[in-house]
Length: 403
Image (cartoon, one colour):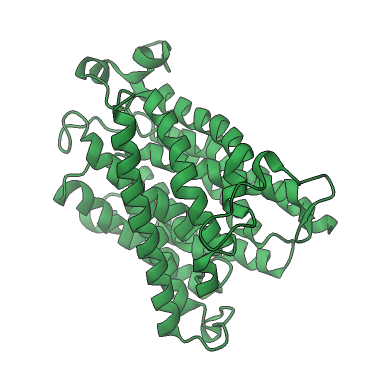
């Protein structure tokens, strides 16, 4: 065990949990109507609590157990065989378990942005738990648990495919199955608190250093570079999105700037351990511009109410970053260089294959999970509840008492 590595991953674990609670929760809460702010906060908080126990019970074992190329098995259920002296690399395995738990928490929490203001709380929790088991945990094993995508040489340092593609694609499927909010797309009330969203976004920016630099699993040069390119990409994404708004509307919004920041972060995530500063800049700019255009297309052209743009920002950002990694990993562009025998074209093929496989897996199983759960649990709230807001109807509380 190395003390410095352990101290850094202890810090990173806290930072990644901070991304969900309170970062993502506040980011999403500010974007909905005031009658639904507590509903969004409750979704994120409840997912954090329930997924933590699920990860302890079987999720970690499926993801990182000594199984085969497809799943890890159940040998490490309830941390069986993991003691105080067990190591994962140079850190305690209990700490590695905790670090990965925070990823398992934020990934289904990202999907919360696809369905706020119109979905039943009981369905959210049941779906999130089943989804982590059958969609997320196996993909983790494929990419980070010595599974078949890892054996092929897929480059996904911190979760472009594992986190963002799984959550983004699943969010799009759920949004399509659930249907749009009342008045969508032209008569939906604007976010009730852009300031709250900015506060949450700022927490995400800070927490993402643990997400990306922590994925080095060591206090070393790789962590330092990952932190550097993460920050550059976040800043570039915010600028790119704001410029796109200025060109189209002659105004740059706060919500646009922070959404562009998140797009930049999602785009650099898979590449953060492979590329240099120039790669961070280009990926951030590309993420801000491309995710902006996809956001407009999803809602205006295809009329899909992915309410808080999970697919456009996370799904597309993660996929874009995964593809661009094949180019910017080049040593000539400041990256780590390609593996022996690998060319840019062959690496790009592996990156694309990983995205397609994981997207199909996520979309298909999300649809199956939702169809089955709808047989037993209420899916969408009735119209009266949607008008009133979910806070009072489902939780018996109000976010604001001066309404």
